Amino acid sequence: MKKKKTLGLLLGLVLVLGAAIPGTLAVSAGTAGDEPAGQASSAEARPTDESSPDSLFDRLMKCETYEELMVMMEAVPEEAFTMLTAEQAAQVEEKILALEPQPLPEFVLEETSDEPVPSEIFYPTVNFDNVAPFGAPVAG
Image 1 (cartoon, rainbow, N blue to C red):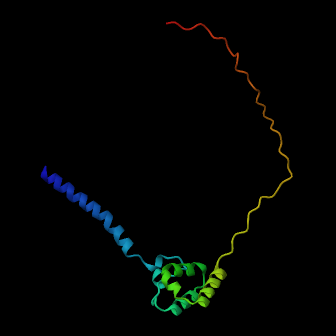
Image 2 (cartoon, rainbow, N blue to C red; image 1 turned 180 degrees about the vertical axis):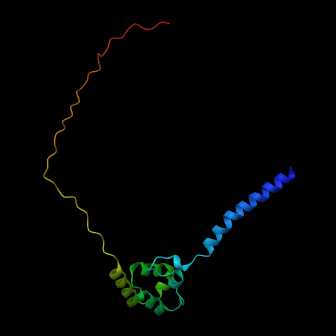
Image 3 (cartoon, rainbow, N blue to C red; image 1 turned 30 degrees about the vertical axis):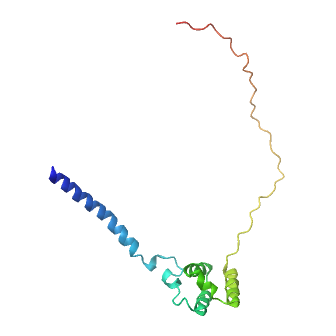
């Protein structure tokens, strides 16, 4: 009986480890090649020198797409943005507005001059007041 319990425990441990280890390794060994094209990787988006507002400004201005700019801005802490001068902040805002995608045109339903057609289905009204006489109670 003790051998069966030991064998069962050992088998259970092997199954749990067999399922957990590949998942853990896949998450921890994420590759940079799995990101969509056109977006900077998280390593590229992180600032190398957060103390220099000029390098942050230069990196933000080098972004060519709106998505790339948003990834860069999410990777930078808010304190780094406070170090930008008012002129630099205005230029970054202009860059964001220039790269921001245009909103889709409003969808408007066209008015029709067609009048509704009356239904050809007729549902007669039925009076259920005096449908059937009550019979004598069933005694059993």
